[in-house]
Length: 120
Ligand SMILES: [Zn+2]
Image (cartoon, rainbow, N blue to C red; front, side):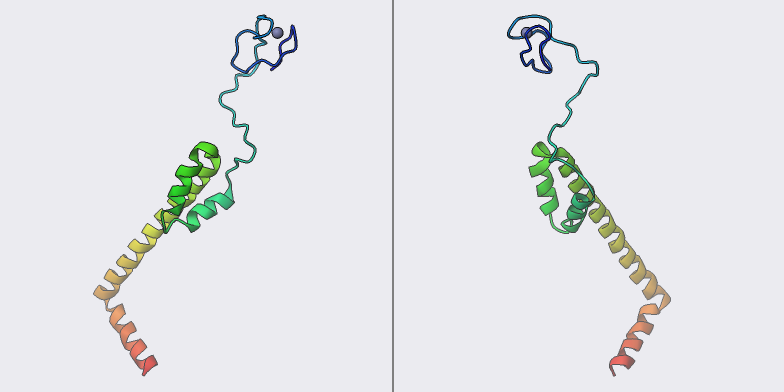
């Protein structure tokens, strides 16, 4: 913002102009912590990166490192990490359920026989 009286730059949250002490112009729309960092953009690429690294804890470390500087990017990485974590969990549960059902139904035995015949 700029002072209407003297044209000096006035901080966003200032009540009066520091130069001429006239009331600072009131901004029509209250801007609450608008992120001016244009480099901080979340997006699919960062979600993908978070997902890609979700097997290790690198994405979590990236999240904590980036959180202060680029919160949007950090958030995208965290989302990717959570997606990776949940999908990994679902796959693990799926495999366990499949093996349990497979053994109880006798599928696994059939497969073992099948591999034995194929291998020879
Ligand atoms: Zn002024």
